[in-house]
Image (cartoon, rainbow, N blue to C red):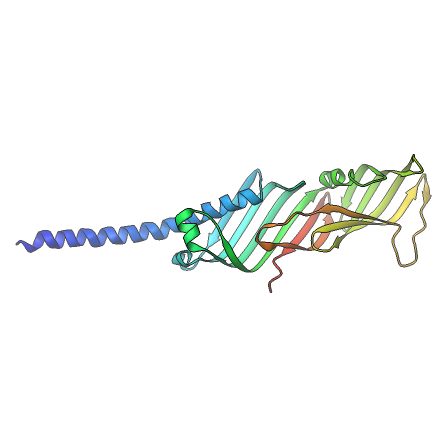
Length: 235
């Protein structure tokens, strides 16, 4: 008879330990996702930020491994650049587990691979062009593979009405140039050099450093938006 209380206490300890283990396993992804969200919020100030983690098994988070991280954010401010949308997918993320689980702080050690896409509105692009010397932009229209501009250029202290059709190209992995393939000034066409462009506006957009080591890989235009593609550089 004396054994029954001891068995009952042992059973309670075992059940309590299992319940704690289950709670920790279920709670760890929530803690990790909240920590990653806080980490990214400082790098990607935005109106809405959604971060999701996939770790198989969930216990992998205890030794600092995440199989998949997805990020989606609206109205993101990066430096002086406003992104209408930012989406990213990363695989094979390694981080410091102690910093995450004890201090709720993210310290990323490595990322196997990642891709990201961001959109910039034509209004934001027009705002960036305001900073270009000797060019005034009154309107800009983005179409698939094409940029249409109307405004004026300053020549010898005078402003002359101008219009142009061009496209955007990467200049390195942080800047974007606007190449004007056809320009008219005061109603007359500007001759295009053989094999060249009428005018190149340098660094109309400079993209500040992105999280996780993302760098620009391509730029393209669609109806009303500029689309930026980025990658981590890993294969």
